[in-house]
Image 1 (cartoon, rainbow, N blue to C red):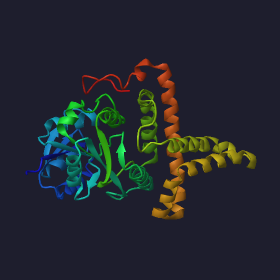
Image 2: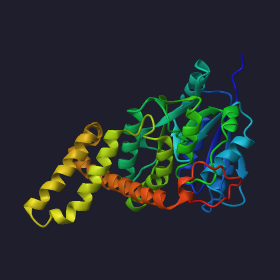
Image 3: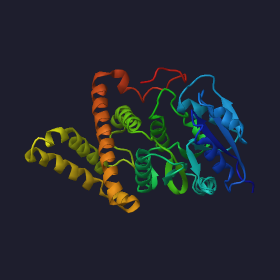
Image 4: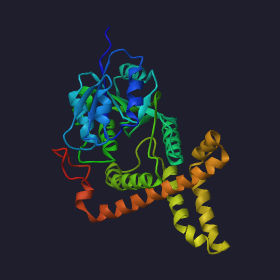
Length: 340
């Protein structure tokens, strides 16, 4: 019985630093029947030229259209029965593609198999990047199994199903994969598997991380309202409470410096945030030691504050803007439709 062709689709935008390691890891896969499709989204750092030096099929987009349209283009260009979407800053473990194909074949009810990013970076990173990598790893490994979100950084799906589901919404940026996961999981299971794993690099500067978390939280509000609650896996009530408590602790910190009395509410909020997400904080201590864990806890508080602030702004925008309320109910016709 012949093995199905797998198309590894790599969207590319200014990833010249990590792309060589990403492509080398794909070339080292144990799965023998695959092609590599790299779609360059009008990079300006020479990423396309880097791709040309490796054995892959390079597709160039004339103008920057965003990650959703770039992945959709890769799906259309692919020849494989199975698509394996892979971010250009992820280096797969050698057996990841093979394990994903096995899991898809084992159960027809499984629509997609998503992988977990490792707790170590692909390339040397900053302390902010290391925190973010640990946080991403822990939240995913603790959510292993059936989930609602779809993680396009490393995800296998039958090409026919991806196209049948309508692909990714090109009008969305930062939330297009969550939207796709909600639509896909309505009729098919999405499995998050630790057997599909890759090292990656994430946001390395605090300002960039805070902006990303704020924007994602803001844009997810209409989706949560439509979905009537948190999505299965990854996002939990305890983590939502931890984010709110962290936001309260950060917001009240200036007042806490005035006196011992005003310090008490801040301390209680901080303690509540740690207790609500205590598994993650224990994981930080185990992986990096107490001193580093304390510093990463402060980063985690800032991240929680950014999420809570984004959700608050999104709630206000949802109340005031009909267009924002309908963000996930309308499918745009063009990759260059207006974004929010």
